[in-house]
Image (cartoon, each protein chain N blue to C red):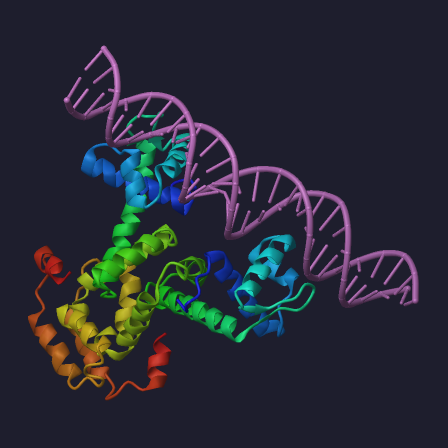
Length: 177
Length: 177
DNA sequence: CGTATTTATTTGGCAGCCCAAACTTTTTTC
DNA sequence: GAAAAAAGTTTGGGCTGCCAAATAAATACG
């Protein structure tokens, strides 16, 4: 991804450290262990490995922080996570908890090109007047088996065309998601 | 997934065996090893594990086939794979090779609900007249940075409405993807 | 300050998966 | 049908990642 190849595990550790840095300035073994659901002893090994790769600043018994390199990698992983979760929630309309679960695993499986396509796809949905709020709501209805046969597609589209703003401004776009 | 919890690895072995069964009636250690890019010795261990879980028929030096249970599990995994790949190719418009790569990894990361949503989403795109071929092509253009500002959205949509068939028949739907 | 508590590390053991190489069984081929 | 080739298995070793328990360091507090 960023020239460094990390196991899923180490990617998760790095992401956890990033989160802890955000909320606590610094990461501690105890907190990492709790967040990852492992014992402290398991964390120490992972830290040594990450330190060996130059991704974290770590000395025994010290606080843990990301190196510049580590922050770059963690940021990339975190970006994937956020994009995927956003996609699952707003495009596939999964509930947030399930989206989070899936994103946690998918972030290790998808490469940059695939994640970038998710970004582009969301961007296109926001950009194209065809895929406006009516359409988004339509997916929810469709999923629920409502209106198996769309009674008035033309009317639905006509209405969207009428209401179509000259240019979609950001506020509108944001309100859709 | 199907009550059995398999490592990603064993899922992959099972999927490989399913493929070999399709093309060769039967799976052999050598072919499994080649397809998975491992040595033959590594395959034997995996086979013992799968046999222990009742997923394959296996005796030392014998041909390998899926049990009924194994076929069910492999089929489920394979379904995930196909759905995801299809989604990546037709919705996100990734090139087939990259789609295959990503699907191979994503199939272990996504749960049934998420995969089902991909199916529903494709179904909705096929169902809703807004998201017709013009729209699909529009994503390609949008990605390529062409028409950063859509010159005539209304005209584009109007044309789609005019050409909208009374009911999309299956042939039409299939031709879109 | 010094002990008690918390936090972190080390050690040994286990499981999953891999390879390399030796060995065994099966299949070919002459 | 026996020797050669191919296919499959076994053994030993390595790596990652986990736990449990023992140990060490750091922090808190009376």
